[in-house]
Amino acid sequence: MALLPIKIHPDPVLRVKCATVETFDGDLKRLAEDKIQTMNAAPGVGLAACQVGHEIRLAIVDPSAGEDPTALHVLVNPEIVEDRGRVIDDEGCLSIPGITEKVARPTYVKIEAQNLEGETFVLEGEELMARVICHEVDHLNGVLFIDRLAGLRKERVKRKMKRMARDQEAVG
Ligand code: NI
Image (tube, rainbow, N blue to C red; front, side):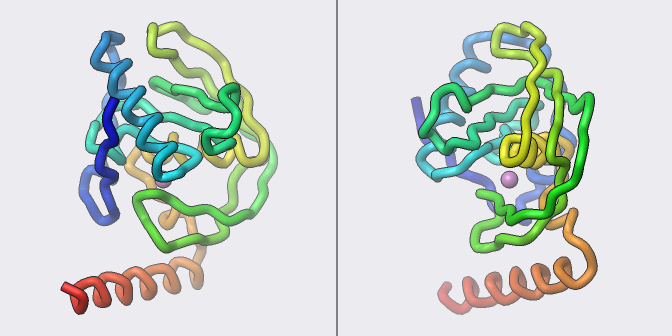
């Protein structure tokens, strides 16, 4: 297993619409293992393959951040098939360090996905799990949470990211 470097916004790989996984082999399993380790080390509650440079529809979700093994799910080719409700809460992203903003998400989602063997399963999530699933499915479509901010929030985040980039340059 290996820790993988996490791609940081505005890396163009974060804007790619990722390809459907068609081959369920040992390489896919190894990538999933590495991603789990990388997510836990971060630590994070979700990680999409594009965030470590692989443009495929594979994501890991674990709203327990490594505390509860039953909360960990590997999602291959996930599709949201049902969603309900709306809740606004704080959200961040390992690829956009230092930014946390309120984002509206469904309170409930139901997805269909495949596991690492290529078998289809259904997963339901509420509250944080629903949020993490939506965030990761967005990643697979090249969408970032900052895209979902409304008006003033979006402007504020843009300014903050510019400032952070400038500070980085100043440091070297
Ligand atoms: Ni993210």
